[in-house]
Length: 385
Image (tube, rainbow, N blue to C red):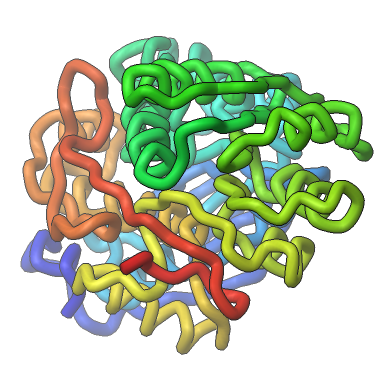
């Protein structure tokens, strides 16, 4: 019996098995109809099925589908099956904002999860806030993500916390660093948090530069980054641009020193190839985690997909588990979701070493997040000794 099962009310019968269907844009998962029914509880999903961030959308969908499948096979939510309604936004703020009114007006939807980027999520949040609909931005770490209102929540760490720990890790091995970061709202805020802690730690930032998300040649900023003779080069961004950075440094510019950055995705690992070996970063989750909840998730993910899960699979999976667990303690309604996030003290935790978590009611974020130091070795990010 999985963790969230203990909260299911007594009338739920063991005969309720999941009826699963494939998912596509504005499609459903869990056996319900597109308009919802009295036998289902609908959760809307904003995600990039297509576009430049489609790799993340694929990982999200794997985790979300697995979570819904497990909830439904364990009795569902208050005797009803979880239904996932997918909306492909390409993680574009304009597209997220445009579909938000349709979601908010769908009375079958009790909560919204996603989008990939904080910017895309924040474009939709005001509409959900106005409708009294919880927006659960499970991947949104921008410091001001929850500022829209009291119905906007995230189990994600803030970049202030995360980048502070990244800077501490870099400071353990370097004194002089060059930093490149992605030129968007998230990247600028993340780098500001990193820089603040880096300077406090006594790191000397000998070179810094931003780059555009759609850049294809980063040589103009990476040449001076290399020529500044740093002890390490730090990248603040996403997986695709991280691979571009390290491949340019290694293949074109002959840089052989330490590299911090990239992301725990198969896309980064495969695109960076040999050049990625030795990459160091911090993350809340790895398939080798000793957290018992995480270990069970990894086992279940491998059984379903015959592959190793990553952080983005895990955080999407946990989002469904969080909402189901909470509603089974309150009610399968919009009001019940909000009440659960405000009152439940023992949500199952899959990151770091804690096995349960609750929310800081002021920030509406997970309390007490800790991170793992990882290094890419033999094509796999492993916990550093």
